[in-house]
Image (cartoon, rainbow, N blue to C red; front, side, top):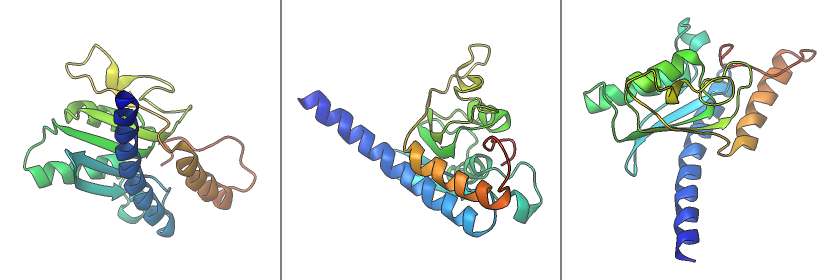
Length: 171
């Protein structure tokens, strides 16, 4: 019974952080950006948050994950984010997965899977590839339904006749 309560408490904590990432994704949606949000957490403290800003910044690297990682590094004054976890509403693309590995995050939790460009489990497991010196466990499907709903809403409005879902490379 105690183990079950401990598991539930851990899930509830992860879900709470994903809700923060969802709040960022909602801000992206309001701004006309692909609705992806991310937060970086250390212990019980959020140290950075961001949402996609590619359109606003005219920067192809302005994915939520990249911006959150940069802000976390600035907050901590170090590029090594050991002891930190990333929560993101969409499975990271190859660029973001590489940044996750090289920033030395402890773990990544994502909501919606990206079967066309996801590199944390759907298409490839870059964050857990033994060829790299640092291994970042990836956990997908956390609050997947609300994460998927935001993306579906955005792309349905942008591309009413399009087939297939978005990819993180489009984000």
